Image 1 (spheres, rainbow, N blue to C red):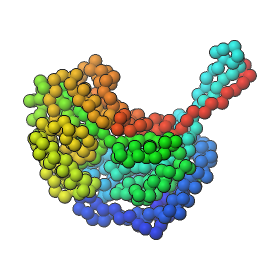
Image 2 (image 1 turned 120 degrees about the horizontal axis):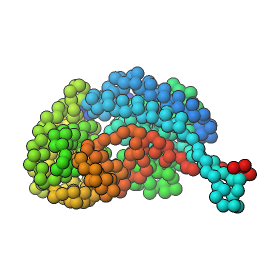
Image 3 (image 1 turned 120 degrees about the vertical axis):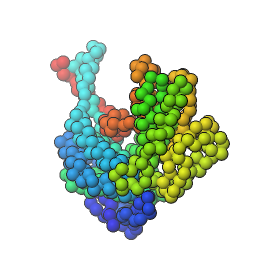
Image 4 (image 1 turned 180 degrees about the vertical axis):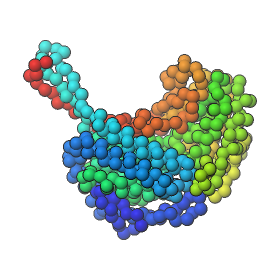
Length: 473
């Protein structure tokens, strides 16, 4: 049984959580579950160490982060297999996730060494002669980080790394389906010189998470997950600083000047990577009518050519969803769209927890697969008459995370950046591109706040001013 991490030390409770492999249902591990008293101890420890954490020298924080980065790299193959085991994503994507987590902690270490205050002269008026402001950013307080199942290592890293970088404790609640990767991060953090109480990793069940959300000693809540849960957290604790990375309904626009082979291959792969269980997976494709007849066969062929199967095979590109229930939900949404008139151009079948990469056309505008986040390997294609219609349809969504525009036209690129109601626009590629150091987040039902190390560090802190008086400026 894998222990949890209570104020920097391993511990076990009175219960355990069984982790099963989505592809075949076999048990891949068990995780200890903390008791309510142990959760209280972890939160109390975070609260008690907050001043010491804020006073940690930058080199101590940076070296702890760099240590985790190095250890992830050293154990990369082992950790990738752990991710595949608990999450079901193919090894090729699990290895990519480990590599990204290596970078996430490295970027955090680099940002930590650059984290510094600024000065501002105030003698712009005679009354302020000799005055200067020193402006720093100080932690708002301990963080509650609630991580999702789809990237159990790297999205947990995006909670932990910025907290350590700014010198604030963090209590992590991993997803019940995939706690093992987060617990391994706790193991690596325990190898550092961080003070006790700086971190805890607590795999409590979802029905006990509300107590952590409510606790006033955790004034920051950083949540990645579903839309209803995210907004309910913000409504529940309006006086806390809540950051939400919620759902998406990723759109890609293919314009006449695009490289159609490149666009088809990228859209096919990144609609279906992680079995479509990514907030920025391609779900909607708007292709200019002038190139539709050329593009659509390329897209369908690229989707049909994806290797689907056992996630342990090195060549597998599309594996199972996180559970058979998740696959059944996707199947139901597709069947509903087909019953309403949609055509299946590829896929449309399920076997256990695996749903075949699927392409739909003629999807009614009010179908769930068009309006909601499908979170599965399904994309729909629609012809449009020009940029105006394409951008209007991209914006006709409750979500606004990222969008991709396949064009070589710089004017259209800047227009997309100006007009599309999303947190990020990717030109010449799918909306699924994310660099871990860049600001990442959305608008509308895609959430509030930004991840991407320095952005999250800013979210976890607030400005504090010291005015110096009587200086010979």
